[in-house]
Each structure stands twice: as C-alpha cells, then as structure tokens.
Image (tube, rainbow, N blue to C red; front, top):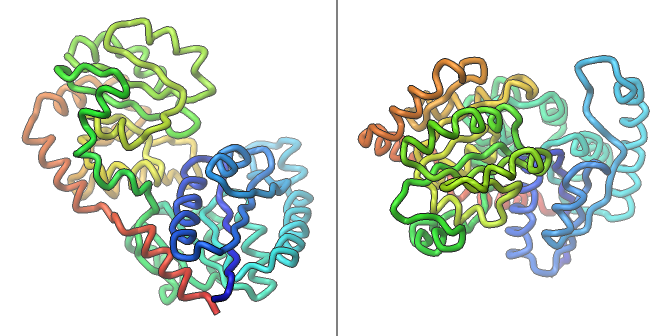
Length: 363
C-alpha cells in the first residue's frame, strides 16, 4: 500500500489549530503509515499546540494585515513573498499527496504554493462568513468543506461539501461522564454549574463582565467555572479564593467540563459553536466584534435563528445581561427547547466526512 503524505496548515487561534489536529488524527487512523507535516505562522500558538499533539510543524514568517499603519503592514508584501517561497520549498521537499488548509495566516501561501505545483488542496471553512484568504484560495481548491449552508455566494458551488466542523471525538458521549467530571473539577453536585469560555486566547470583555457580575451570578445560585485565558490569568486568578468560583487559564479536559456544565456563556468562534451544538447545553453567545467580517455574530445568529441559543452583543451587555441570564436559568422549558434545537444542528460525523473528501483526492 502506498505511503501517503499530508500537509496541514491552520493556526493563529485554537479555532484553526484543533480542527487541523482532529483531521490529522482521523487520517492517521485510516492510514497508520502516513507521514504528516503541519505548517503554521512562526510566532503563533500552533508552534506549541501541534508538537504537543505529536506532530511536526514548520513555521512561516507571516502575519495578518492590521487595521492601522504598522511596521507589520509595511512588511506584509515581503512576508507574503518570503512565505510563498518557503512554502514552495517545503512542498518540493516533502512531496505531499494532498494539502489541507483550516484557516489562519499560514494556510494562504501554503495552499497557493500547492496549487501552483498541481497538488490537490482541500479547504475547511469553519465560519458562516468566510475570510478573504479562503475566498481567494477557493478558485484553485479541489474541494471546500463547509459548516454552514448557503456558502455558494462565496465559493464555487460544485466544490462545496457540507460537513460541519471537526470536533473532539471525546465530546460524543459526555452524558456518561457527569459524576467523573464533578469530581475531576471538584464541583458541588447540588449546585448548577455555569461554564464561562472566552476562546483559546481569552476575552477581555467577557472577563470584565464576569468580574462585574460575580455577586449577581453567585446570588442566583450557580457555581462559576471561568476560563479567562493565559493572558488574563494573573489579573483574575485571585477570584478563585471565593466560594463557588474557579478561575483557570486553559481547560485540559473539555469533554469533562462540558459534562459538568449546566449553562454556558461563550464567544461564538466556529469551533466553540460546533462543540456546543454537539453537547447541547443552554448557551448565551457573546460574539467578539473584533474579528474579520464580524463572523462570530454571524456564527451565533445561525444558531439563534434556529432557536438553539441566546445572544447578547457586547455593546448591550450592561443593559441586557442580567435579564437574559435570569430568564435562562429560571425558565426550564426554555432550557429544554434550546438544548433540543441546538442538538438538531450538530454534525457529529464532520471529521469523518472531511477525511472522506480528502481520501477522494488521493491519486
């Protein structure tokens, strides 16, 4: 049997890195002898997370365009040319059978170089509103796996496959893990648990909200498990001294914390949305307004419009948060409806379906 080779590129945030790792893990199950190489941006979190998952990664000198005049912006054309040149040499040396991009700065030059070398490429678009890189790459891509419907506005229709986003396979059976989860995180079985997620890098605005509303949340009878992000840990860790509050920078067992959670407050990054659909916990989305094309609001709205979640804009948190949260935790029928509707939107076989599409590109 031929020994296949795959290059995967995705990074900048966990939302691009973890789908790439999930795809690689599924490919490895099917092709145990395959060789894998990841390509990322040299100073981003993928340079740590990918080796931790057991894969080799090479870095490109690349970053995104800032919205103001900076040295990075002036250097941007140089970085693009440098990354294209390095991508071409990586491809020439590694000789992949398929190149897979899950988004992030590095996937642009890498998939462009693969296309120039006539190597099949697959894009995995996580958001309901694609970024500029994937729109440009779609013209030459062999296949485009998407998580939302109606993306033929942006991509060639004959290349689109609706798969959903890759998610951790350990999330498929969290109901059986509840007692293990409560004991692992030392949570009180007699209290409802509110899980607060700010995305892989943390969220300043969500952290400020929880800090300001902590007395209100505890008075409403919940215990708070608060992931604040590495960047903010020093500022917020002292809140763990309070009863019914735990503050962590990073969660190593997402399957267990989802099993323990009764309610969730979360950003609306594509991976978080897909995971939450799978675990179907009553959720309030607070989308980040600081992302390209405001795609988090669009991701969250796609769930809200199907009756699967609640959403509060950052600009409305001060006026709306307490009333929306009160409604969520006291209206039992609302909780049931949100969970049922969210579950209908889950795509548990996404990783397998994406890998089926990759396999179809193997010569």
